Image 1 (cartoon, rainbow, N blue to C red):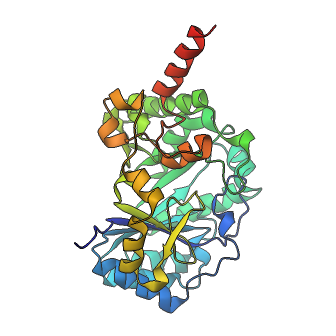
Image 2: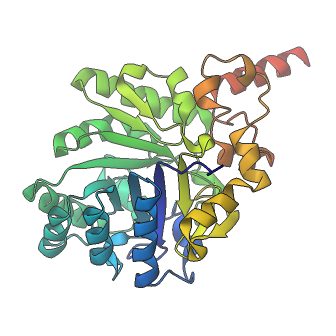
Length: 338
């Protein structure tokens, strides 16, 4: 029987970047044996043949990749919807024209509502370049959303961040918890209460503005804020999305250094091999325990972020360390043992 095909691929084109952000997870890929242009174009064709309908191009900084234009053209010609994650500091008239020509959708990184906060994470001078890049993006009427990596440094600015995104003309304000990989040190990883504060503050702004926020890699957000104002992507445990690193390795998650097969042998064959990996099977069929097994979200959440679970507990079954029900269960357990 032919194995399933993913609906989406998150492709880290390169670890190379013009910045050295303190929370960068992709710094792990610097110096990787990056796919050649011929291999990249072959991958895009094979993704199309397998029915992949969406590709997220990320990095590093895709705008500095010398193979970006032919890859965008190939994606466009094959009718694959795609997005480009960018810090926007290198945006130019030429790059904006290129992105417009091939109907790109952008996710622009803004890590705070204030210049000082953003630059604490991304470096001195990045705010001015970011705003200049956004001016060029708006000039071309390129569709975009913003994305903030929530950390201990910026969680207090979540409400203002949403208001800023709306004022800049972003279609949505996206948020993702910073993960403890790459350059990210433990002191900037948000605590549970800090993440909850950020989400509820963002919800307050969304309700006030009638605006949309999207939370990435955190399905339990639906337990915290009004689902009418939030979307969460919950297909990671269902084999509907696959992560690809710069060398063409299929990763269990783009924040985990667990590799299963490589697209250089052909994407269809690589994905078939990926699905046979024991770890992948564990992720797709988690053995849920309380509080997950009785949770109203268990069918869509399936234990939450398995990468965060693995980094915290060394297991893929969850529960997500950021789940509010997990925290409540721990507090009750602690009280019982006092």
